[in-house]
Image (tube, rainbow, N blue to C red):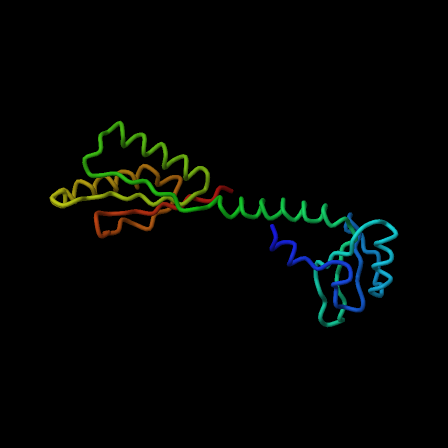
Length: 175
């Protein structure tokens, strides 16, 4: 939060001599000299908050609004951006070659949920030590999972990993 306050340039700290003022509603108020813009803000009991800079014309673009309200809106927008970015993370589902049928069905339901939400899913089939002799059984399980989701996902194919096999499924875009 402290860094947000340091990044926002307000009132007398704006370096440009000319300021393009914009109201809270987004309406352009015009280009003012720096001192005139600050006086206008003081009259309305608001702040001049720089939101951009036009280097070609040497004019700062600033919003005329209360600083606290601006920071609140900025904080909400940042939270929305973070939420949107977090939404499409790679999900992982792991199992071994000797997973039971009911457990495998539960894993498939989880994979289906992830794909419906738009997440890519990495399915890891793990082998440990002597289990490597059952690699073909694990490969067949991964093939069956890949075929089960062929209608709702795209696959990169099954790949050999250090300790087993994996397949990545990408959700098909709904149109």
